[in-house]
Image (tube, rainbow, N blue to C red; front, side):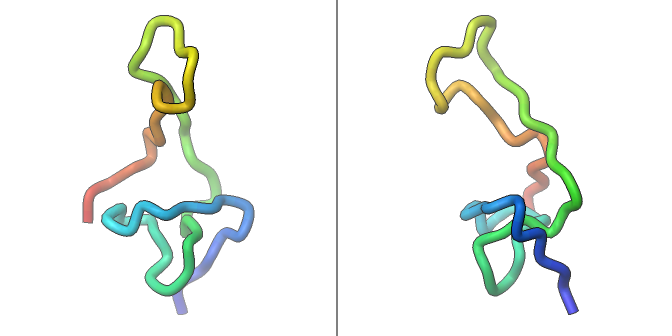
Length: 53
């Protein structure tokens, strides 16, 4: 059975770590980062744990 980390909500279904039946991540923890020098909006942040299916 696939584990579901209910502390990490996720809707990115094309990530390898996305739970197959619920909107959660299956990892124990995730790495969050940014692609901006001075992030000012949520769109400036990224899940660095993302892996394409």
